[in-house]
Length: 308
Ligand code: SF4
Image (cartoon, rainbow, N blue to C red):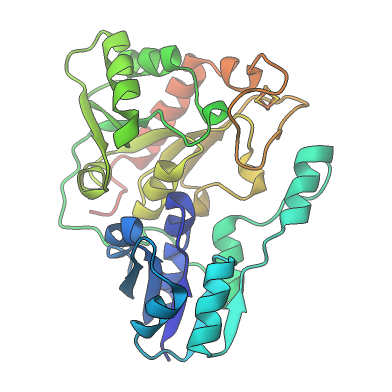
């Protein structure tokens, strides 16, 4: 029985859907053209990429026959595709009200991890990571740092990243998207190390090949954090205005989530452009020593145990 899984955006959400494809096995995965190279690496899938500006009708016509649809997007566009495919459909529960209540009142019970909600919609149980195919690789022994995030309040301060790069043992590689190249360059310069590698690219080719060889990643709450999780690379996740309990943590707890206990957290569902109370204490008070200690712990725990 072949299933169509729909998730068009964004990086972290698409990566978290990898667990569903790994559990189902025979999947046609509909996603955006920008994320298609990533989905090619998922276990048990064929990919159909939605090209920029393409209509749901045109997209649906290009799909192979399937027996069921799992809509993990829950948007008007994915609704239209589901109607056109006209097969039994299950859909992710958005939990929008519950998440708004968490941010506004800080009391509502947190929703499930996003990967679990996807699995619930698909009617499967998630297996352990890695969920993405990995090549016959040798570990580089490097530590990857991903200082970017879509929203500014989710970013740990640049000077802390530079100090972390300075204090990390062994090779360090800075990872980010194309637009984050200046940020990576400033951090590299601030670190005082002249042996750092920088990868800031539009696609994921070099990022994937590099990340899967690393022994650990330190990242803000971002898509690259989830990418490492799906590859089975241990993660130290730095959380500010969002919290791991609100659904966006790597599956299977492979790593450590760090944050500062503050009454204002969580203050946003996805982060924002500026701290509403002005001091950005959730990130400013997260010290380098604490992150270095967590990094040291996951590197020691993971030594020799990673799948190759
Ligand atoms: S300090 Fe509090 S209010 Fe400001 S961004 Fe962090 S969680 Fe939000």
